[in-house]
Length: 233
Image (cartoon, rainbow, N blue to C red):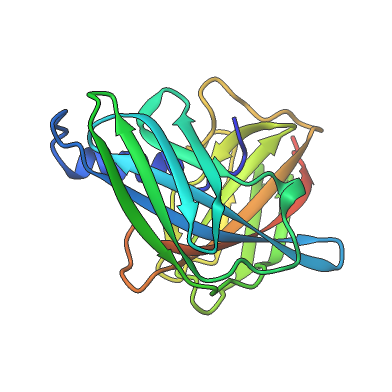
């Protein structure tokens, strides 16, 4: 599983549960976002993009007005044909911020219908989050986290990664939330997974900036910070 699936499962759940799914609803929506991370002494940037539908996609591509000769090919999120994504490999991130542009998505649905839809991306980005605390409490048997809130980032989430595998995903943390407690018995872990004492995991804290219309399909920018943590007893 690609570790940059930021809120894909959360967004997909909202999409499915907010409406009555109808196979005839061949309407898509696209969202492109700038992703920022720390790389050594530098902040580097890339993009992620998602396409959603209440029906099912056969294929989705996207083209930017800033790079009309470059086509991005999205792929299905696991078995979910209603959610396609593209996430730039971290090795392709650069110190140059992506330019403001408009992305045009070209979708073919499984019933053969074709449709285009657009998403406008500005050049606004988020600073990297600051973790004030991220350590395992051996007395309370839990991972304690706290962070400094970022202006323009009303929403956060936490991932825990084991090697290349995403093993924990929090719910969306919003409304000024700046602390989190994670235990082995809590919710959010992958099915059948239990963290091992003495093993090192990568903890990622994500921050989200929304577009002028604040909803799950209008993310403008994401930034994240990560720290390796040894799980305790």
